[in-house]
Amino acid sequence: MKYRLDDSLGYKLFQASRLMTNRLNQNFKDNGFYLTHEQWQILSRLYEKDGQTQNQLALLNEKDQPSVSRLIDNMIKSGLVKRVSHPQDRRVNLIYLTEKAKEIEEPLKMLACKTIQEASLGIEAEDLAKCLNILDKIRENLK
Amino acid sequence: MKYRLDDSLGYKLFQASRLMTNRLNQNFKDNGFYLTHEQWQILSRLYEKDGQTQNQLALLNEKDQPSVSRLIDNMIKSGLVKRVSHPQDRRVNLIYLTEKAKEIEEPLKMLACKTIQEASLGIEAEDLAKCLNILDKIRENLK
DNA sequence: AAAAAATACTTGCGTAGACAAGTAATTTTT
DNA sequence: AAAAATTACTTGTCTACGCAAGTATTTTTT
Image (tube, rainbow over all chains, first blue to last red; front, top):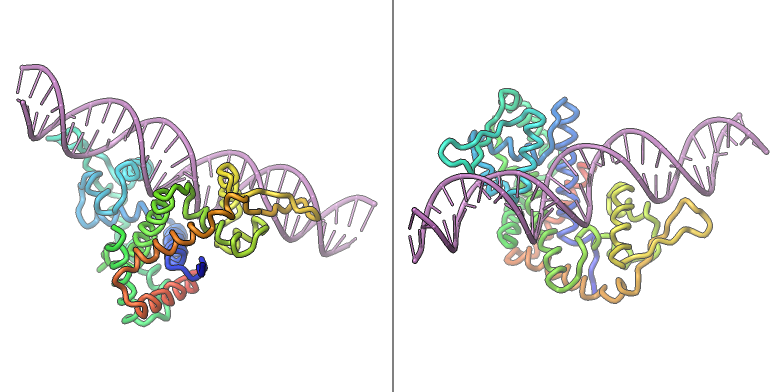
C-alpha cells in the first residue's frame, strides 16, 4: 500500500503542533515566565472570564476532568490560580486568577502572538486563513 | 491586547493534532491493534527500512533520544520490535521489526489512511494540499 | 424520607515528551 | 599508548494525557 508517514496529514499536524507548543514554552521561559502551553490555555480562559469551574475549563479546552484537575494542582503550586469551593454547591470548585497571574496577562499575550508570528513568517495572510478554516473542519470531522 | 485563544494558530493546530492522534489510537484499538500513534511512527520508519539505530529513529521522527529509548522499551514489551546490539559498535542498538509487526503492516497502513480520510472529509483535495504546504512552512519556520 | 441517579472532582495507572545528568564504547588528539 | 572528546544510549525528574475507578455532594425518583 502506498503510504508515507512523512507525507501524511496526521504526522505533519503532529510535528507542526509540537514545534509550536515547544516554541511557546521556550518563549515563556526565555522571558522569565515559568508556565507550560497547557497552563497558558487555562489562563487564557480565565482572562476571558475569571472564576470558572474545573468542568467548564475542561469543556472549553477539550480536556478531560482529571487532566484539568492536575493542571490546576500544578498551577496552584506555581501561584497562578486559586481553587475556591463553590458556596452553594460543594461538589464544585471555582478557579480564580491570582494577582500574580493578572499582572502578567499582557506580556503573556504578547509572547503568544510573537510565537504565532514566528510560525507564520512568510505565509500569505489569505493562505493562513484558509489553513485555519481547514483545521476547524478537521476538528469538526473528528469531534 | 486583542488575543483570543480560540482563534489562534497554535491552539487550532494543537487541538486538530490531538484529535487526529486520538482517532488513530482509537482506530488501532477498535481493530485489535494495541499500539500508540508514537509507536506507529517508529513502525513506519522500520517498514521503510528495517534495522535502524535508535539515533536514526530519533532524528527521523524529531524526537530526543530518551523518548525513543523508552518508546522502544515499550514496543519490545508488546512484541513489536527487537533491540540488537551492533556487531561492530557496541554503543549502537539496531532496532528490528518482529514477525508479528511485519504481519500487521498492511492493516495498520489501511487504518492510518482511514484516519486521514475521516479527518479530511469534505475538504477539497486542492485546499488540503495547500494546507499541508503551510504546515511544512510552519515546521521550517520553527525548526 | 429513602433510594437511585447524576454531577463534580480526585486518584491510580500506563504512556509519552522535555530536559539534565550519567554511563559505556569509540574516535580523535596529543 | 594515554588522555580527551565525541557518540549512543539510559536513567531520573517533572509535566501532561487518556482511561478506569473511586468519593462526595446534589438532584431526581419513587
